[in-house]
Each structure stands twice: as structure tokens, then as C-alpha cells.
Length: 265
Image (cartoon, rainbow, N blue to C red; front, side, top):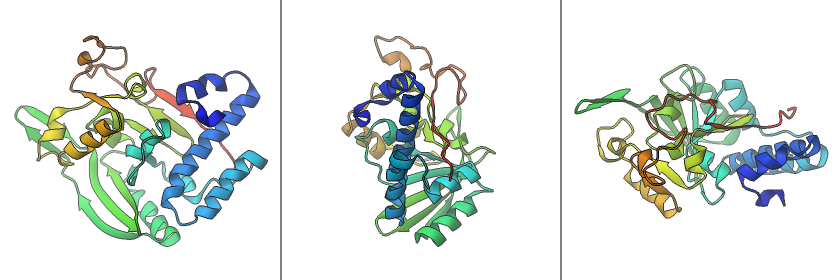
């Protein structure tokens, strides 16, 4: 079954022929919809759409996905990690967007999905610890809830929704899902259940997003191993595209960039 293949095998399998490429592309959209379906009220509509993908190749892939596409927003956090590791069960949905498009997402979730705004918090743009200057990449977080469901709308300090991802406290959170693509910045580490973290971001209470001790423990309980430096992994060898001193950008040769099928809405 295609669902039994990990992401690396899927990408290799996808290259065998056009028919398989189409099938894998549709399955990737299915995975995205299944993750989003946890947080929308119209579950029946979404799951019917998932079934239609396999049957007719024409589906309504979900209103939330459409909003992600139109606003240039992305899904990050544990939901993005769950895309390549199904053993990860996300506790909430983190949507990264810009300040200009955040109201569109909040309006959609409140008017179409029944969410209410729980709180909105402004985040300090940076902090100084000794001689180091840390940026947050985040200016505001709006938390919404609908029953047990939780969604955080995270506003970027930049013009791109991906800016906060690059300031994450661990490499395990440097993944994101767009409406039509998935990106993993450190696949050599992430797919081997390893993560590099910034110790100051975990321990220091003055960090813009607070400490991350509990999330670190949760990842460890899921079987992930952490290092404070990529040199500490695999016999003190700094692996290609894993070194924290290497200049990187989203979509470079070290990223795993997976494009989905662009199914008509």
C-alpha cells in the first residue's frame, strides 16, 4: 500500500512513471487534507473530498486549503512534522502568515468554521542574552478555539509567512506545508529522528517565545534525539546541509521540497 511508504520512498516511487507520479501527488494532497480536517467543522465535506480524489481526480480540497493558497500562508509546527512522521499527533494547528493576511484567516475560521478568538498576544521582536542578539520572526499570535480544537495564527515580522520558521528553536520545526507543496529544511536530521536546538532559546525565560523545555521533552518521548550542535551527531561529523554555520534558504539543494498536484478547486 502506498500509505505504508515513508516520504523518501514515496519520492523515489513517484519517479517511476507518469501514472505513479499522479497517484503519489494525489496521495500527498490526501495527507494534507487529512491533517487540516482535524481543525475544521465541515469534516464530512473534507473527507468526501478526500475520497473523490481517488475516485474522480476532481475534488474540493477544502476551503481552508484555498485560504492558505490565496493568502500565501503556511502550516508549521507539529502538524508539518506529522506530514512526514505519522506517529506525531499534533495538539494544535499553527498557521504562519503575514500581518496583512492574518485578518483573512481569523475571519475565515470564525465565520466558516465556528472558532472564537481566545487571546491575541504581541511578541517582542527580539531579545539580548549576554553578547547575543536573538530575533523572534514573530510579531503577534492570535489563538482561536472551537471546542477541543485549537488554531494559532502566527504573524511574521517580514513580508513572507516563512520568516518565523527560520527562527525556530529547533531544526525539527523548520518544516512547513503550503497549499501546494511541503518543505523540510533539514531532511538528513529530521528523517533520522534527530534535531539540533539552540540552548538559549530553550532555557532562557526572556526569549520572545518563552522557554521550550516541555516541547523538547515531548519530542524526546516521540523518539527524537537532540543535539546542541550538528558536530555532535554521527561521530562529530558536520554533515552536508546540517551545519548551523552554513548559509541556507528555503528551497535550496539541502531542502526536501515536495510539490503536490495542483487539483482544480
